[in-house]
Length: 240
Image (cartoon, rainbow, N blue to C red; front, side, top):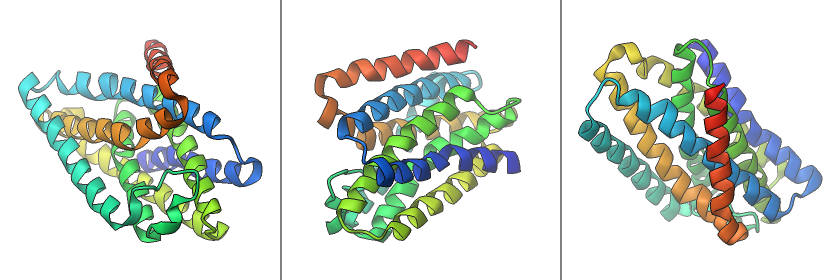
């Protein structure tokens, strides 16, 4: 369990790295969007190979599909509630966070990180952390840290507050990975399969709601190709 916590925290620490990068180098929106699209493709691959494929080994297709939709619905409700309270622009790099609530933005960032960290805990049970999933989470968190922090900087937020927000997300991500370690054990049979399917639905919804729109707003028609490249990379890493 402690190993799962450590890997969850390590994967989420790229949020802090992204924040530091944004303050030191002020990366362009196109660079941020490209890394975000690549990370999205990697995470979609991880959903397919590390979650759905495993869930189908111990549960029926219809059950997996329904529970996956349940995970998507829960994430949607949470994201909707937080968006109404000031977290809708948490990834905006232009400073729109100035009109939002710091607490809501913090909770929104935590909500984004829970599904992926939850799943990461499962891979520790399988003999070692999944390198494709770890890389996917780190790559998706890096542009999120850069984009959100650039916006917070433009909105005039104190640098210390920005770092504390990401530190809190790192800690919660570690806890989520530890919980995933306990609940997603494949030896638990049906229970493990349902938890995998639920996490898959939440993770896919997070990608569609918060990452792809930001990437497409900058990359436009090139977004799909970069996402596909990330998915292809997930296939290659899984093969090794």
